[in-house]
Length: 384
Image (cartoon, rainbow, N blue to C red; front, side):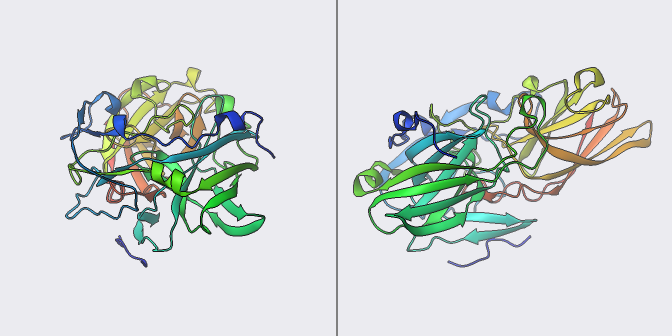
């Protein structure tokens, strides 16, 4: 693995009432997950206790470039906590879209198993983020393919495909650092390409068409002063900041294991990722398969159960010493199971051995705290 390479159709009417620049306050976000040891148990990771963290009290309004020395290989508490400025939401086509920004960020991109550090340009003005979700169920939509066009007074300022990303505060989202042309109000077109992965149940036939949301971004001294940074004393310790909570913006959490369809086979861990595995019997698997049982693997982060998308996951099922199934688990979106990996497995039954392997780690950019996790992912084994 290469490590840290690289160089330094219209909005709805209620958009106006939902638009607010209120920043996400620091207060309740100051919590880190308690460090865990040993294998993952049968309980949902969100049932694990959190500990309230203390901070230095060093609060600033400028870009945060703090790094962690001797960072662990796995999820760790990021060195700072930042607030964010919500710029607006809109509904267009099948989608709800939100636009936010915060201070510019260092982040890491992943291509295959190679990780590359994307340095912070001195010209960067803001880390601009977008989220897209199903407005009926609040399900966050990975793999939707987002691009942003920023204009000012009718002139193009920037146009980019933005990265699918993972952060401790927002979970899965889309974002990138942008250089803006001074203070003022900018027009922002957020274009959604649409999902190409299978959708099941009530999601079948939805989220496949492109759509564009029209929003605005106000970049002034007043809005920038709302964004605060606080350094974290526990930076580098095993754990994670508690994700933000905001009424207008859903968070991409994986379902608790007991909420998954079928019967939970067990949970397993690989590269700090947690997998909850379920067997959906043939008589309940109609939306997934054509008369066969369904093997379902739901991947999430430790501590906060944030969904881990865009992996290559394969399974081998052994029965009575013989290979009964060997193949890929398809990335799939379902209203009940959420974003998961699954496949029809003929005759899947109690006593079968399931070996899960990750051929491609999550192809998402990572903010600090996640950049060393979810890369080296050993095989896992469970018994049905």
